[in-house]
Length: 165
Image (cartoon, rainbow, N blue to C red; front, side, top):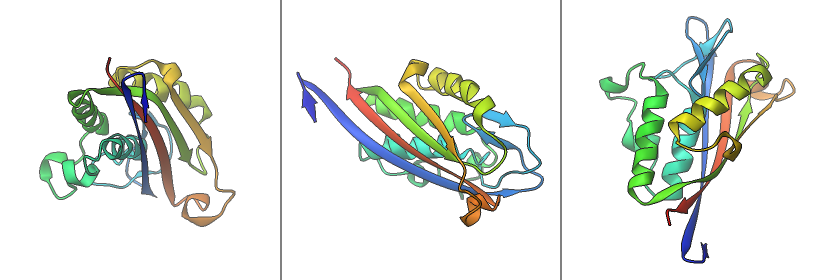
């Protein structure tokens, strides 16, 4: 899509991680107090992972596994905000920035509402954009499927990138 010489690109991302005991629960770079955490090679921050896939997808740059493979020891337990920053640097190098970012967290428990302002602030800082351009919403799955039964957390992200003027 083009408007007055500016190019727009849209990308969609999705991630899901199993909830287990003995791990930290981290979403959007924020540690959430809960008796379970997300299982993964990195810190398993499903929100950051979903955003990374949306960013990369918007410019046809592959996916998170292409850039940050889960069999590479250098990414073991890494803070996903570092990966998000690296992915965003790729976007900036291509001449794009975030126009807006929309995220939906699918979490049965704990309630996400108290954490959303902190998550938005952290994401805005890493993505070098205004918090008002980032939406984070939370939904339960009404006790259906693995999310609804408290066994996993899923995230969907959609980003609109715009070329720098």
